[in-house]
Amino acid sequence: MKRCVCSAVAIVLLFSPGGAPAQQPYVYPAKGQSAEQMSKDQYECHQWAVSSSGYDPNAASGSAPRQRGLVGGAARGAALGAIGGAIAGDAGTGAAAGAAVGAAGRLLGNRRRRVEYDHAKGAADQSFSRAYAACLEGRGYTVK
Image (cartoon, rainbow, N blue to C red; front, top):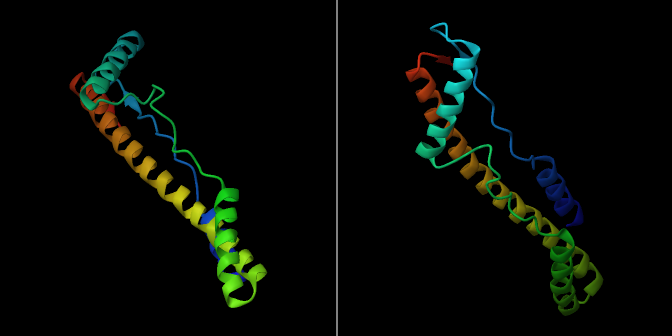
């Protein structure tokens, strides 16, 4: 039992990356716009994309979900496991198994919250990027 739970915990840790940062588009002045004009257009298009999408990638827009501690999950799991183990005649083994399951449950819950947060942030980034590109293309730039 211990080996199986520990392997599951290792797999969850291995595949728990943070969110990927948004990439900035390449903007080319296709109609010979000056660097000064390009800078002005990029600023104005950024403002327009923020108002159109309701999202500003440069603003501190909340934080990632709070990660819950593994110790609390392990402690709760150990307590429940000890009770179950005591009924079966081996409280120590029950507590150890419960601790591993409790910690793994916390890891999976933390991962689920992170995935939901990253998905929402990714959709907002995409909406902003599409609006920004549309504005610049409307002003004669090539955006990739």
